[in-house]
Amino acid sequence: MTTWWSRAVLLGAVGATALLPIGALGSRLGLWGIGTGIQFLRVGGWLAVIVALIAIVAVAVAWRRRLPKDLGASAVGLVICLLAAAYVGQLQYSFATVPPIHHVSTDTEDPPPFIEVAELRGTVSNSLDFDAETTAPLQAEFYPWVVPLTMPATPEAAFAKALAALQGMGLEIVAEHPQQGLIEATATTFWFGFKDDVAVRVRPHPQGALVDVRSISRVGRSDGGVNAKRIGEILRRLSAADQ
Picture 1 (cartoon, rainbow, N blue to C red):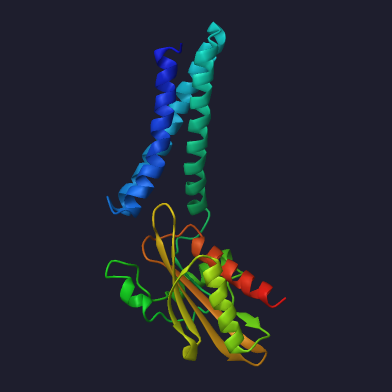
Picture 2 (picture 1 turned 180 degrees about the vertical axis):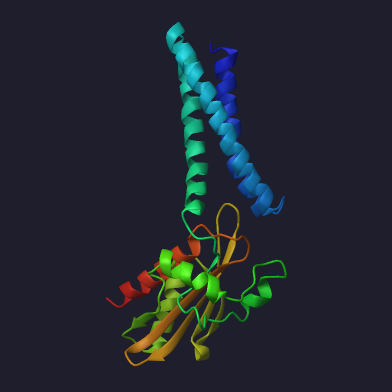
């Protein structure tokens, strides 16, 4: 039978880890705001670090006293805490290593427009205005792959391929405007339910079709690089579709 301190370590590890999905799912379900959900992550991460330090001591004590059951329980708690702390740390690192922007576009002077999506964003979402003076230099430095794509296909064929690419990525298609060569879509994250809006514009080009993609987060100052990665994936799928 395990001692109270090894059980406390295991219980603390489970409790710290449980705060991570609870905070995220609570935000997605509307039980509390996104800011509160993020606080759950931070508290869970710090609690995991504290419990991990205690678990290290518990493992050492159990090893020295030759208490195999306590050693096992403490070791499991330590592993759980390390995984939880590593997850939170990775999230913080991803935000610390990217520019504090939430709006990315292959065309920084004339981004693809939003028509129907604009009505869905509400009054508390980030502005749809693209701050080219501030955002464009950061985007060019950190995300050099975010550039327009020229496709050797008719605009109609490129439009169909762009629509298939968005659907293949699991995005919700909000509107299709074939005459304008414009597709509007929304991406929703699994845990927090963050929503990012995407616009793909296809225009005629001497070599076939010119594709521009725009992605913007509804909330938050920094997107952790998600919007640029999404645009990169869309462009990659379109490039692969021509091969």
